[in-house]
Image (cartoon, rainbow, N blue to C red; front, side, top):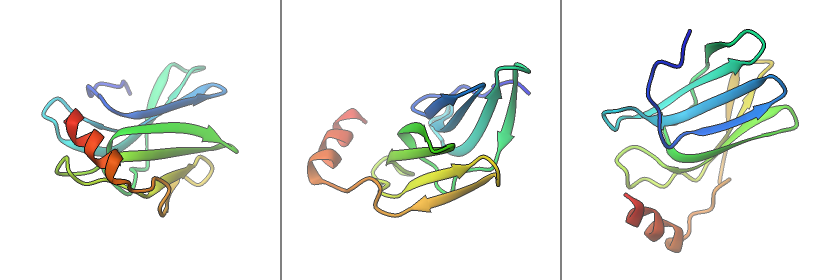
Length: 115
């Protein structure tokens, strides 16, 4: 499988021999909740379980052998997504973490200016 969908504004992080890409917008501006993992050793992409929420302008990080996504914009370009998500590589399950990204008026205003 190739990463044949153009992506922007996605979360990504690498650990060991893998990279995970999650959330994004396609060329039509449609927000996606899809996720893929890239294996450096085999040079292949594999679809993994979708996140629970479609999002863009998000950030990703590996911590304690799990992949986390935080932020920011949800469907409609005006929805601020406050829960983060945790992906467990062993179970292939996303878990929502409430209030991981606190909602602040200042952040909301700054994000709206970017859109």
